[in-house]
Amino acid sequence: MEQLQKLVVRYGDCEQEPVRFRPGTWRSWLEPHGAARVLDIGVGCANGLSGDRLISRADLADLRDGGGDDPDSLRDLFVAVMVWGSGITNGRGPRYTEAALSDARMPAVLRSTRQAVREGDLSGAYRQFVLNGVRRSFFTKWFAAVDDRSATCDRALILDDRVFRSLNALGWSSWQAAGTRHWPTRYATYVSSMHGWASSLGVTADWLEWLLFHLNGRVDEP
Image 1 (cartoon, helix red, strand yellow):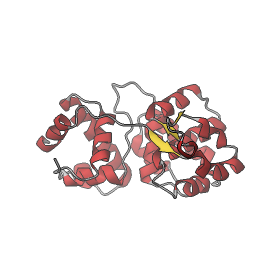
Image 2 (cartoon, helix red, strand yellow):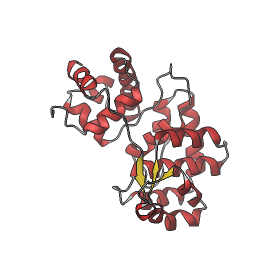
Image 3 (tube, rainbow, N blue to C red):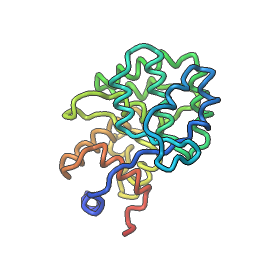
């Protein structure tokens, strides 16, 4: 994709910044489920505004690598993913997270989808993820967070509406590339396509994913 190559050159010096979140907004939703300790993740903002903190993708990886396989550890990682994905702009994030925490299927879903991701079965993970309040934009964040496989693998990537908007603006269609409208297959095709493009462009797939997220469909703007 020639246009994608131009974007990579144009934005090559940019990188993803940590996400600001407001612990006070989340606490009342998480405390009944014993998950409020997640709000200590990351670092405090330099200006101390409203007690805001910053959480990065690296913080999620540290929580994953330092946590166990028990339901509480997986739950805490999932909540951290939801906090990171929501920031201070998605006011529905705490409510949707609480809906998922109240879903009795959560322990089994988190365990089975993490296992599928680590086995490289991304379409299987997509099929299995069903939790109240959580849709593709967020459960693919979970996939990316739990995937600790070698960088030589086609590791899971996030596919949310902003990334999709950029892909469509570049003329790429997931269902045409996959040859089906079956979403689990389309997601796996997206991941493999992104890794292929990243390799040919000399960047990492997760950076390329972030760039498409950052552009949010504005691929023609200077």
